[in-house]
Image 1: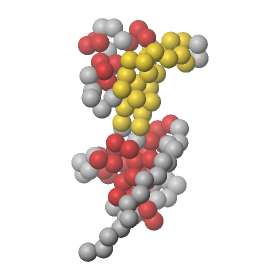
Image 2: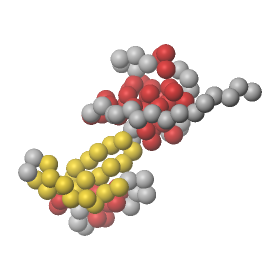
Image 3: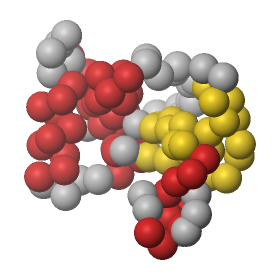
Amino acid sequence: MRLIESKAEYIPQEEGLEGIYKQIELAGRTAYHSQDKITPNSAKDFVDRMIKSKHEAALEHGTVYLALPMESMFPIEANGWGKYYKNPYSKSGIVCEVNGEKRVAVVTNY
């Protein structure tokens, strides 16, 4: 048996959907010890393969930040906000302002 010293590192996620894909790929390839296969265009294909093969643990490393319109809050059952509100892996309900408009902030995983 070979013992490896564990460590943790904060790696900021790049903006946008591509940033989410890259973060997921980095986490997944680190787990699979295949970081050498990361290329500038490999992230989306990697994520698609993880979804297809149901290896979804790496997807938790891609954080999604949403700012939904206030009017989408009510009624909760009749709109997209409800799925985040009821999801135990999502945090929502904080009111924020984006470009001068009030929004509901949601943080969830890919």
